[in-house]
Amino acid sequence: MFKKLDVYVFKRVLKYFFLVFSVLIILFLVIDFVGKVDQVGGGHLTDVLLLVLSRLPLYAVRMLPVAVLVSVMVTVADFSSTNELLVIKALGISLYRFSVPFIIFAFFTAIFAFSVEETVVPAAAKIEKHVLINSGKKKPLVIGSQIWSKTGNRFVSIEKLNFTTGEGKHFSMIEVDKRFKPVKRTDAINVKYLGNSAWILKDVYIRDFSNKVFRHLEDLKVNLHVSLRDLKVYSAEPEKMEFFSLVRMIKHLKALGYNVTAYQVELYNKIALPLVSVVVAFIGIPLGAFNPRNQKSYTAVVAIVITVLMWITISFFNSLGKSGVLPPLYASFAPEVIFFSLGLILFSRSHT
Image (cartoon, rainbow, N blue to C red):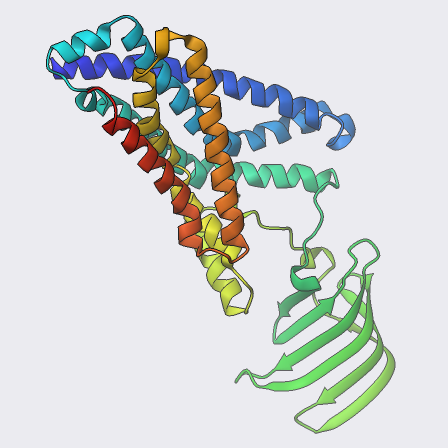
């Protein structure tokens, strides 16, 4: 009996889930398409469609908890309105046992969300970046207004590099030997890209450490074996990166001395956000069972209120974490713990 009931409940919640999720996806596609028509590719329909579809996987993952919450509440409310839930309880099956298929469904949704974030979202992000770069909407990011590049045995640094004009300030080039010992340093006040990996330096100071020679030149033409395009670094969006790629990036930036708190919050969010689907299931079951007069508007209003409150709470804690007020791990998981506790309280107060 339990097995038949579990399958029956699972099919019911799955039907509502696909219905709600499809509506949310369609709304996103329509709204995002309208918002991007005049923004990308000078109105080219192909670019707009490609951009909207490339943004879809990430937003679909974010909409999964909403679809889970609504589908769980509607399914339980249906069982309650048709008195099926009353019959189930009369047969000695508690609300806790009746909730097992919903919890399993929520766990599968969380696993699916994490899988999509690790595979589909990064691939889609590359397509999105390609479209934005070609349309000129995505600009290069210079971390700390400074670019570092390694070419052979030389380390090159340029500050305030303008990718449109190819001009920059405060150029530095350090040459090292096989033992990684600095042998020569070249500094310039201004630098400009000439093309074909050639650069012109202005107001140049050269220090030769091996021969202990110091020179000053008005200008110097050098071939850095790196073009202006090679120095372009586009902003990495941690929420669209794979988990282990983000781990490596955090480790690298930390070794360079950068503040990685915001990236650590996004790293923990990779695990915390998919679990929201499980959390909302624990909230939706008791709320669906308690439906005054079986009003369908009650389900919609409560689902909207909970969704808004949850995402506001998550955003608030993430902001505190990224600003360093809260530890990154606490900032990512605290909202889930708070709302999970709310779900357990509602469960404990329900007539099981």
